[in-house]
Image (cartoon, rainbow, N blue to C red; front, side, top):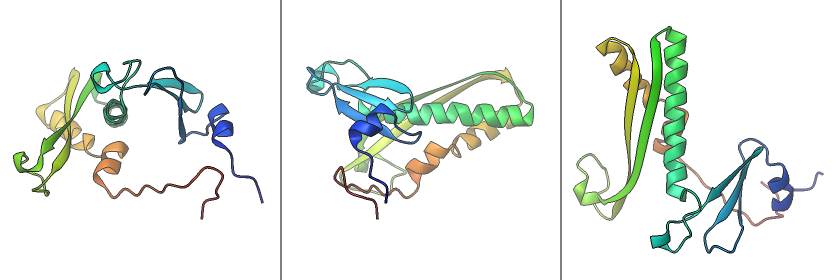
Length: 161
């Protein structure tokens, strides 16, 4: 039976699909993130008690959706042979009261709203542009965020079941 990797071991060489977050001090919320061979910094803004050394967790969530959207649209446009020069996506995260959301199922409490704006520079027909906006909803991160999500938590050193 192989040993379960420790977080320290994972931090040294996390496999793709694993992200390790470690406090790096002296900032209260400043974290070092390890994702494959990449090193990133996460933090909270000053007004939330952080040092603003990096994006906050919701900005990373928005970055995941924005980057996946652009990559998915690029893949689709290239596969179709469409002349797209540049794709840009901006995603804004905010929380709104459920009662202020016309198309939400929830009627009480707060709702997480991710607003996505897509700009496509290219020689496209209106139909092609509309199709690309439809395809944006099929990016894997979009599907993950709107599909069923389960989060399983276990202490370090325990094995998965």
